[in-house]
Image (cartoon, rainbow over all chains, first blue to last red; front, side, top):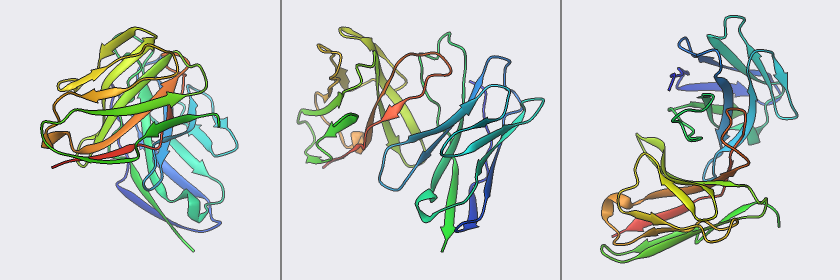
Length: 113
Length: 114
């Protein structure tokens, strides 16, 4: 599986935008970029995914570099509830991955009131 | 309520005992998964299932048994629990295995083996 690199931790203030970066220089042409987050003492939660174009949903936006070697998860207005570990994950198009999600260490996001 | 549930949420058992962790989903998703989460290892896939009566091993299947007699249920059994199986266990479900399919996770079961 292609690997991702994320900062260990980031901090933000409440109601400010947060940009969480992810590098994936070995991404293949058919890999989807997924983001999940895990709030304290909860299971992982899907946030957003994309292939080539930027994506928006009610939770966040995903900006994908033109060469697809990096992406950024954007939380437009951070709230205290957004404090979590954020995982950037590449999903390949099939083969032997059997749907497995490979979670790295992720980025611990701290949101200050 | 719709969603994916796990029971029990917390379990303490002793070495050598059999333990079954339950997982139930209401979406009729074909695919279900069991992961364990340990410090330093992230989440690792134990077993997955493509449909009722179809299961297969993931990365760390040793010491675990699964079954899937009904689409909505996917129990995980530790036949003879060991201390190394102390972990947080997450069940997940998905409509498919395509790279655009998201997985929905349960709240987890924290298992302690003494």
